[in-house]
Amino acid sequence: MAENNNIATVRAYFRALEAGEAGERLSRFFSEQAIQIELPNKLNPAGGTSDLATIKRRSEEGKHLLQEQRYALISIVAEGDNLAVEAEWTGVLAVPVAGLPTGYEMKAHLAMFFKFRDGRIVLQRNYDCFESW
Image (tube, rainbow, N blue to C red; front, top):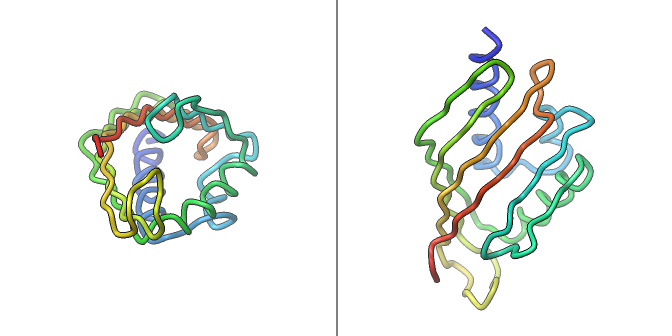
């Protein structure tokens, strides 16, 4: 039962991101102790670790960078409070980023791993593989 609830939560989380939700509106998905780990990638070569306040702040910043974003979920595997997602992400730039013009459509292949506690995300670990531009 918890596995199905966690899957539903992640699906709702992606729909919220696609709808442009950011900041405090995303809090409903996360535990107060949530940590998000972004492994090194083309946009963030050093990677990084964010607490909930930073997750919310970065989501607000991202909202201004993108006209839209979409997540195509390829697979979700759940075991207890752990969940793995394979997805394809597309983001359309609202402003120039990394030498790319406004309107450019960025694409990335994602592996995301979530850990839940009491129905909320306590850990999100992202492996983002951006297509060349």
